[in-house]
Structures are given as structure tokens and as C-alpha cells.
Image (tube, rainbow, N blue to C red):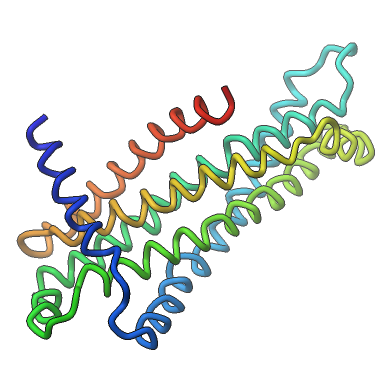
Amino acid sequence: MTKLLHHLGLYFIMLKKVISAPEKWSVFRKQLVLEMEKVGLNSISLVIILSFFVGAVVSIQTAFNMTNPLLPSYLVGLASRDSLILEFSPTMISLILAGKVGSSIASEIGSMRVTEQIDALEIMGINSASFLILPKIIAAVLFFPFLIIMSMGIGMIGAWVGGLSADVTTADFMYGLKYDFRAFYITYAIVKTIFFAFIISSVSAYFGYHTKGGAIAVGKSSTTAVVSSSILILLFNYLLTDIILS
């Protein structure tokens, strides 16, 4: 418990340093564009592949479990849509991004810490926390929702392909996709994604920023960042679902 409180205290102290106006906006904008490429653009191919095949599998499994002739086949499209929008795209993709993006952030900042690059920035009078971490947090919070929306669309294409292989006609599948659709589901998914993006970027940056030791310590920080981010994502997934949908 004491160790947890110690980490929480250091985390919020770091956030206080992070949330400050950039000293040079021109440098900040360049750094933000660079982080958007690393955090967002480099994750697009992974999100597309995962979403397509998971959408297809969800559709096939739904069709397999709805063999009762009294159940209309359009329910395959309905179930696939709700599964992708409500849970898979915002939560599962965020967990995967915690592994890819989170470990990258933690190892990058951890390497800078052990090679004393962060100390050099502070000696020059630069707020190292804001300079290094703020662009990563903003890039994640801005770009992750686009990745999740793309995941929903690609996942539904995959679900359609999976439905075709399970003898669900395109007309029935499209009817199920549109049946009783609530736009609030998209809002709910985006709200969750923004929280998850902040958790992944800030928690990973925290463990990287407070790395002590050498190369082995960087690896440990990266692993701890991914595990901690994943646990917090699952915790906040429960809390946000209970608060928003209850």
C-alpha cells in the first residue's frame, strides 16, 4: 500500500510538471507531429489487421451459436455491431496499443533517463517532463479515437465477410447493422478511448521517466508500464461502463 501511494504521489507530481505551457511553440508543434506519427500512424496497419479478422471471427461465432430457425439471421449483424462498438474496438484495441505504444513510450523515455539526456535537458533549464511527455499525451488523446472509429468500420467489414461464409446474406447483415442503432454507443466508445489514451501515454511515460539503472532497468520499466496500463484500462473500463451505461 505504501509503495502504491509512493507511485501515485510521484505520478501526480510528474503530471503537474507535464501540464504547463510549452516554452517554444514551434518546437512543440514539430514534436507533436512527430509523436502523432509514432503513436498513431504507425499503429494503423496493426489496427486494420486485428479489427478485420476479429470482426470476421465474431460474426462466424455468432452465426454458429444462432442455429435456432426461430432466430432471424439479421441478428448476426446486430450482435457483431454491438460487440465491436461497445467492447472490442475501444477496450481490446486499447489493450493492444498499450503493448505497442506504451512499451515504446516507456523504453524511449527510459533510455533517455539512463543515458542522462533528461538530466542534460534540465541543466539547460528545459522542463523535461513537459517537453518529452506532453506531446505524447496529446498525440494519443487526439489520435486514438480515430484509430478506434477506423477499427469499428474495418471490424464491420470483417464481420460482413465472416457472415457471408456463414450463409448470412448481405441484405440481412446490413439490416442487422442498422437495426435499433443508437449513436450514443459511438459517444460511449470515444469517451472510453480518450480515458484509455491518457492512461496509456501518461502511465508509460511515468515509468520511463523514473527509470533507474541501465539497459535492464529500461526493459523492466517497459514491462511494468504495459502491465500497469492494462490493469488500469480494465479497471476504468468497468467504472466507465457502470457510470455511463447504468
